[in-house]
Image (cartoon, rainbow, N blue to C red; front, side):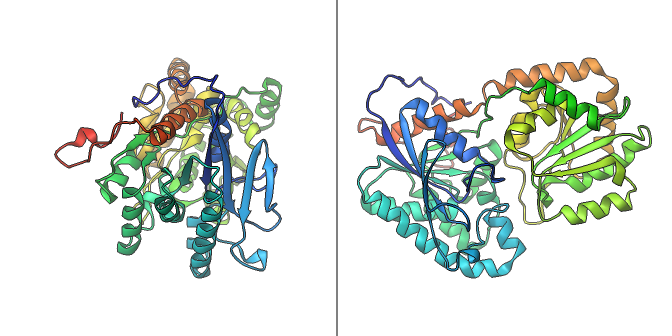
Length: 437
């Protein structure tokens, strides 16, 4: 991992304050929006950082509130409010791909976000600005932080690095990354992509988004297992958005193969997305409709119970037509924590945590036959399944949300310390200076 994990004293009476700008944050209690940014924000409190959040508004959400102890402000960027459709519901990138009219709304989103950032930073109460995703947050963050001389950290989550790769957008990304005081990436795959965009990043840190420590409710897991598992046939599970990069179509084809040996094989699909109708039609064509249960969105705290109830977690991600890959995938960490054996594709950031025959089994992308073979293998080889889950639990101990928050706090502290050493300028002849791990 990286060398920025020195312990921060927890008895510091002076808390530092950061402004977190993100396009992805829970809009209300029980929201389906993925909560990893919220978990990071709340965990940073353990390391003497108080973080306020600025996010786009959405119809039905509060303009200003305290959400589970976090001060959240949401800026309007269009009226009527129902027209604010660029963010949420799967994320900005998905919404842009789904409806081209959303591109017309981008200038308004960018402008009002920048104005909101400037207004908050000019209050003088923030020590640091933290932007999630390069565009537009990272770009707006640079434009706001430079004139106000406030340290600025950009966190890259993967989709923002791999997608939106046209010449003009790449220049915006390069400008943003080069002018940040620090950049964090969530995987080695994201790191490689970021360096291909801008090799002259002076302070690049690998900090995976961690999984929240949790334990299954054994009674709840038992009920779920009794409900969905049939005889000795494997109960499989997938957790994630129903989009191309997740490769759920390959998983369905694998289920059809497994069915020839285990007619009662079951697959639980936890998640929503634009491909849901297409995938349901595929189950009909493959004659596995009764073997596949589309559960839709499941509350975050209940996911570990579904994972614990299942025999195998499968993440068959693949590279999409625009070059995007799975940058990290917190669902893999959740499965590892739950003690559920993992089958995953050997590409992107997945291989940072899933090591073949050690913490899981890796398959080639778009290879349903290989997925099916490994499902059958794990179903028959209990010793192998136990070994994989045991090693995976050890691995995930260092990949929790608190570990991520500690590393992020250290990056923040380095950015605001007057006596911090100046970063070495990166060159292609000095690759060891590309990142701090």
